[in-house]
Length: 442
Image (cartoon, rainbow, N blue to C red; front, top):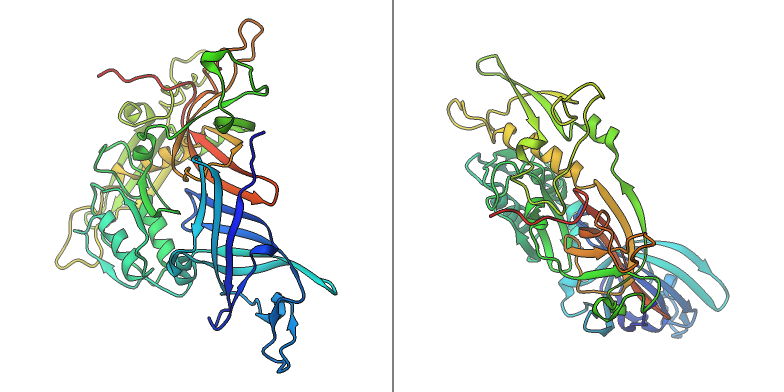
């Protein structure tokens, strides 16, 4: 395995009143950093083993020293500056020490063990915005003429008070709403489910709101799927398992993997992923409108990570496929507006253009799910696309790749692990179809 050690360069912790700072670098034995496309904030964990002779106690005038846990003391809200140097161009390390805005905050302390001359504990860390989110509410009314991406930028700036704004994909649909004193993260995740991207248009609804080291991201699933692969990884149990033309670089070797999920057909049918029927009731004219959504009507409009999904027939004697019959019926009151002046007769964002499509995109995204471990690569981010090659299980030619499992995957979540002996990256990869992606006809 190529899991070279990284170097802990800087771990400084400040008391929650900002009056004292302690260098705990020598006591850190492991650090784990997490990103997830379904998490609005980055998180981390640091394991510390510390001697009792660390910091001068405020209560003892003679200057005697005591443990960090009670001497600082650690009670939550402390800031932590982190810097870890990598060991290659693919692992430049992590640096959260340059600006105070980048510091982690201690959200909780666990696994506290105190002995006569030694203590150990685990610090659970979050970004500053995660703390702000718990103390802020969105009371504002956003007009129906405001695009969703504009509202997202406003909430990030006005209520989370952050300048860590990454990529915000533009939406083609406007949407008016009232914050109703909900927390910023709650509103932002809710808005993501209603967005239709400008770049690819109708049939591609579904956004994700999450945080990476590059800032807060508001990305369409279709836009993420359209990215070029950031790296190619190959699974090989033996270093020279392939000939010279297919030799595997240790830095891009899949050290181990597990197929976590390979389709869940019954769950998809219950959710109405492939075909659903929606009934809308209009409060102004007391009318009902019905619409049927079929995956097959939109699949050619979307950017997928593999070949087009093929569904079986509903029975042996039928020519009707599972994607042709609604497996979920949803009824709701049509959204006509948000306290607009005058009488509004226009839908506040046509639900037929995003609700069923978004339902399809979120559920189909987990058609395949893999857990993989690779050499530490801190250049990767949640939401990136990577290509994975897995050897074909065959007696004929061990140099061939399996076309069903190999192909493009999205990084749903990742963890960069560092300890005193090694460093590696573990990831959960997902994709919406099977087989390698076929080139579209132009």
